[in-house]
Image (tube, rainbow, N blue to C red; front, side, top):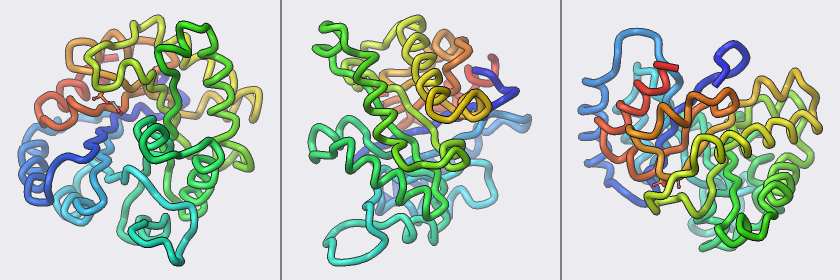
Length: 257
Ligand code: PGA
């Protein structure tokens, strides 16, 4: 990570876990562990129904709340969906867009991801844009082409100033929830490539200010190694973010670097 130019962000992705009651209990435990000194930015992306409880529980703390999904229209006949202005009005600051689970299980294409990114930015939210290759794609040697396509299409029509508010999360699909982590070198190689792709779109000044995270089985025992790399500016953490002490251990690893 490079703190001079960009934020280090540790973000939890709870996926479809925890009730509002459990959110409150987590917050009490987590807040008791928060260090007093300056630390990296922390975001908790919780299920939509837990957002209100999370905002209440983390009010007056430095933990920002994020959503895990957003619709690309601001209102209308989209039963069951939640829009970016609705999230922003609640006080939500971040939203995960294009997670591989949503791409694979809910049919999110690069075009839909792009519309969601623009909707989030338009409402003042900071999108955490997920990109990543499958094991098959890695073995075929097309990782970089795929990543470039995902990054470029997610950012189509996004201005330079808006791009600075985006976070890119490199999440190799083969490492998500599998216990298999990319090595620091593998993760850094792709994160550096993502920054080069952003540089080709917006220039060096903007590229160096964008936070690029790694995600995929990041845990207390591998976080320090991953976060030691110049272009890895934080993590998007699934499983390990469900336990307050594990998430805090990763935050401590981020603060060490
Ligand atoms: P994991 O999930 O940490 O459980 O692998 C990461 C993610 O899907 O964002």
